Image 1: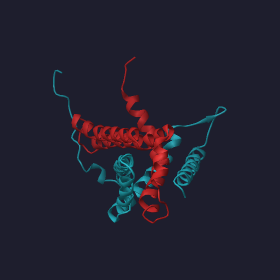
Image 2: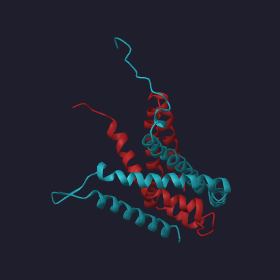
Image 3: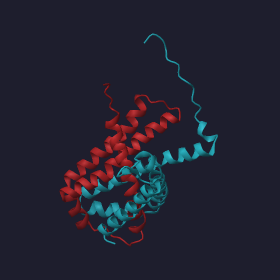
Image 4: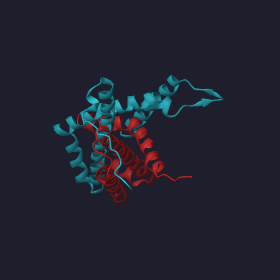
Length: 112
Length: 128
């Protein structure tokens, strides 16, 4: 059977699409509206405690990494649709940006 | 390779010709804003790891007018992503229950219910 690397790209893409659909809007609502309006305060102790907990770290990483990967994969496909080709530059720009974000997020979570 | 493969020319603006293609592009464009907002969250995590002063600086930054405007646009695209993502779920993952196909409306409604539940849980966890 021919082996394909597509599932490796596709599974986190689908998971990221679902996470982005379910969680991202409420996160934007919090950081972009409820905090600016003063409804929510996200105190440091509470956030640091959540990020300190191993399960909290996993949740935060999933919330950031999966939608980032979803966006990278989808933007790559859209670049192809726009006639920008599917060469190395497009792949490097899309997946590279996502990887930088995922590594930076994971490093920050490990450091908390 | 013996000869150059034929590459069909793609007009950059092909999708402007028909409303349904424009809607498709808007749907795909949502991922740009999902990605940009994810980057904003990464900055938040980095600031959180740097300590209290840095975190409070991030909260001030996320409350600044440009950040609020940016996130308002992100929210519009993110909500559009959710709606379009849920709309295709019956086709992307059809379900059968005891041998009978589950109605597409039920699958979509289930996703909206999950959206409401997850949003509520996140708001409560955030301290509403």
